[in-house]
Amino acid sequence: MNAPTKILVVDDELGIREGCRRVLAEEGYDIDLAEDGTVGLQRVQEKSYDLILVDLMMPGIGGLDLIKKIYEIDPEIILVVITGYATIETAVEATKRGAYDYLPKPFTPEALAVLVKRGIEKRELRLEAQRLYHEREQRLLELAGEKSRLRSIIGCMADGVLVTNLERQLVLWNASAVRMLRLSGTDELGKVMDHYLKNRALIESLDRILGSKDENFSMIGQEIQTDNPKSVLMAQMAPVRDEQGRLLGAVTVIRDITKLKEIETIKSQFVSMVAHELRSPLAAIEGWLGVVLSGEAGGDEEQRRKWLLRAKERANSLLALVQDLLEINKIEAGKVAQKMESVQVTDVIGKIVEFFKPEAERHHVSLQMKPSVPLPAIQADIQDMEKLFTNLVSNAIKYNVENGSVSIETSLDAHFVGIHIRDTGVGIAPADLPRIFDDFFRVENKRTDRISGTGLGLTIAKKIVDSHFGHIEVESRPDRGSTFSVYLPYKK
Amino acid sequence: MKASGKILLVDDDPDFLDMHKAVLQNHGYDVLTATSGQEGLERVRAEMPDLIILDLMMEKHDAGFSFTKTVKTDPLFRKIPILMVTSVAGVTGFRFSLEEDGYWMKTDDFLDKPVMPEVLLERVDKLLSKREEGQ
Image (cartoon, rainbow over all chains, first blue to last red; front, side, top):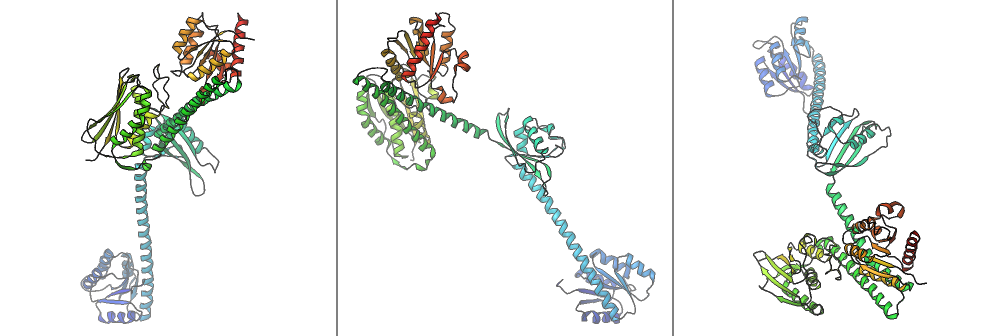
């Protein structure tokens, strides 16, 4: 202890007080004096002392009373009793009240110094013990806080948590686990896990962990299907071990992977659809090449040339399909690649109309731009806009009828510019309408089976419109025609 | 040796119809075509072909199955052999085999698309001669 040791001498005899001071000051202690019990008590209230010498026989507050009052203030203080009538009784009485030792008068300076030194050592021990005690109390308090904090964290986790002990009792769970696994009976504590858990597979896996003798056993991952609500869960179960590697129980973390599973299914469906769509034209190309190479179909030079041209057509459509797939991939890979700039949509469409004029003439379809209202510029990626309206105008020509028409009109409301591509073509049956923006969906009937297409044109169109925060709508009547309306946002 | 027989091709892909037709006609067969199961059934009823070559995937994915079921449960037509050509294997990863699927598929032979002309001719010849033996 760095602070000087503080000692108070309470005695009504001036000689004793001064004598003590002289002896103890030499030892380097900080000394205060009090001439009676009242003053002594006052000193103790004002200042904390390590050791107090008290004369048992004083006027006013008696020594024994003073001892009691001092202990009420500081129970760790060292009290040494000074008494002129050293009897067994007073000594016993004083020690009963907690005094450390007693010093009979008259005493030598050496006896005083030795006793005080011993007392101070005792005081230091007591303070150290007290410090350790407080420290332990503090640690326990922190531990309790830590425990409740951990409980709160586990309780708030989005993943479900279950802890099972070696007796197969469920000892910890959180709200997510209750919700995901539909745990029942959780108001009763300390039951075996079968009481709460209804999933057989999960219980079996936990039993495998709890029964495992293998110290290297680390984890079981298991997919769990649940009904009501229908979901797919991933349960990761791991043994809980102490520092010596002894098995204490099992901890299970449960995550809802329903959405991931759905995405996985959609992806694999898309891949198998793509594979099929690629396979059909390839098989046709190989078929035609086989016909020509084998010579089994006969035919003259001119005939063989026609067959090869059929193969070439399918090769072209295959190429267009791959092109469209790359396009979709590009749109989905990220809007990062989009270069947003101020675009006059009517200018873009004007160029596309010019480009498609010869194509329209070949199909005997009239193609006209009829901008009903002038449109403000919008923020868009110009290449995306070209692709979008190329797809829509090309469809309107392809799916048209002899002497039909395609007209492109405009509209404007408070937030959106509208572009309407109206055709007089074959139209779309109401049953097919909801599916026309799906991947690879193509309306198939007598009137469309000679029209080539990848089934991805409208998919791409919708993805472009979506990526520009717009929407696309279609109105159609079979044999009357269709109108595709694109709405894109603009800033006033 | 000129082969003979009336063969109905049912396929929604005009390329396969035309290429199989060219090969078969060149070898002396009469060839009828249909682009849907419905049209195919009409041709079966009207023309009574000796053999049907059928694509499994038509307008609906099970069109091929319902077509064969209709033909094979009709006492008048059940004897007509059906050669199923399909690209299903490529989509589903499943392969059809006569041993495992022949019973419920009720067809007489399977081939994966594309069918090379030599293979097509060999199978057609085999199915038609089997039919003659059976009669």
